[in-house]
Length: 173
Image (cartoon, rainbow, N blue to C red; front, side, top):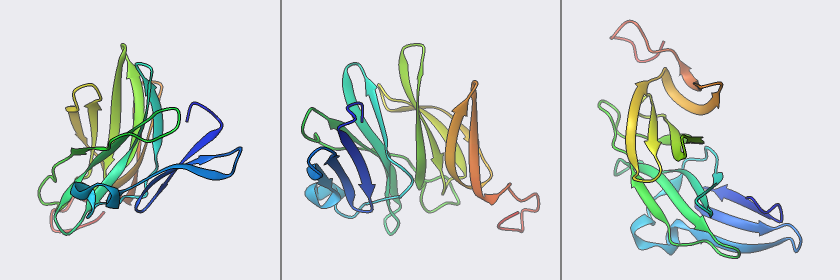
């Protein structure tokens, strides 16, 4: 978080804000706290904190495999508490049963905030505009993209499963 006194920690079931000075949990939000999100779980791919227009936000991936529901979770952090959560759904791309968002990288381009999201289930990288939550573009990746980093105008994606197979009868390369 921007204030080094606080540390945001993601776990399977939500987010906690740790006060480093008192070694106490300052704020905690769980999926169980919000009925529409009770069946979701974090995808364990990293929590990002960023500031945009004088607000601090936390963003990470979440999903429910059984229903095929996947997307991005967004929480606003004020000086002492976490705000109301928002879920931004991302549809699965056939034949994937679930989009399964993994790492979210935050970038500021031309005064706008964008998210670059590795979609493990879809084998894609998407660029989403934060302001209106719309996907700007989608690009294929290799099999099971997990991490994404931006450097010198390029996006680099790590794939757990390697490149896409050239033989359509194979599942992995």
